[in-house]
Length: 60
Image (cartoon, rainbow, N blue to C red; front, side):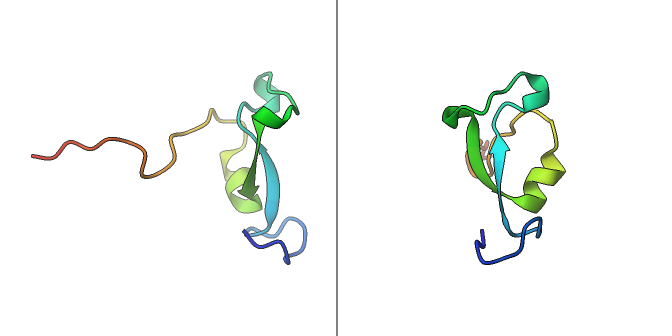
């Protein structure tokens, strides 16, 4: 995340709601996280996804 970029730049910072405000999420600190503006805009009001690298994999 680049804090030196202008507002609304895809790689610039934004606040993301873990539980989207449109789904009843609040502005409490526990429900906010930093995100790239572009990632936050793409996610829109979808439910939180599992971050990459945290899912277990089955190995044959």
